[in-house]
Amino acid sequence: MVLSLPGELVLSLGQHMEAEIPECLRTPKHTDLIEFLARLEPASPGADDCGAKDWSDLSQRMHYVSHLFRALHERADLFSPPFTDAQVSQIVTGTLPDGRL
Image 1 (spheres, rainbow, N blue to C red):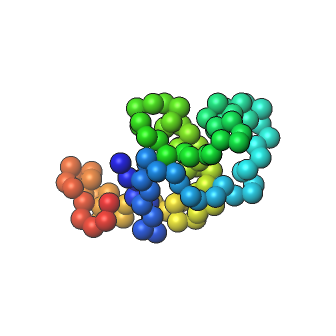
Image 2: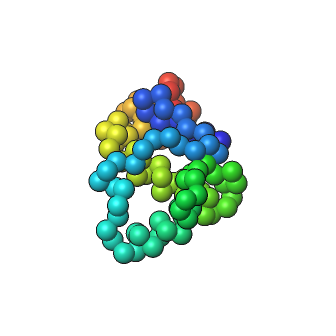
Image 3: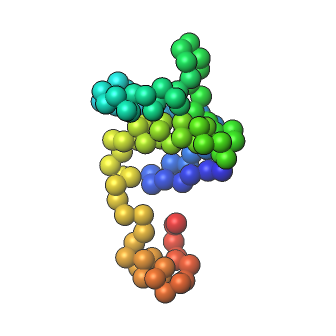
């Protein structure tokens, strides 16, 4: 499976995502978040391979998603609407929109 994002970024969900987590999110401070991430991340000195080999496995999936959200947190292009106004109009009518989806 792949995830296509703006800026021609295509991520293979079964492969480790090489994008680094920004400094502001590397060391969480909220206790619940620290505990949550500890359940997902491999114990040191294990390699942090976030690729989900089995997407039906919740822990693998959440490991990838947690890395994805933190690593791409500062990408402004991800905050833009996913569809144009014309595409939204087509979606509302039940039509497959033209252009890049």
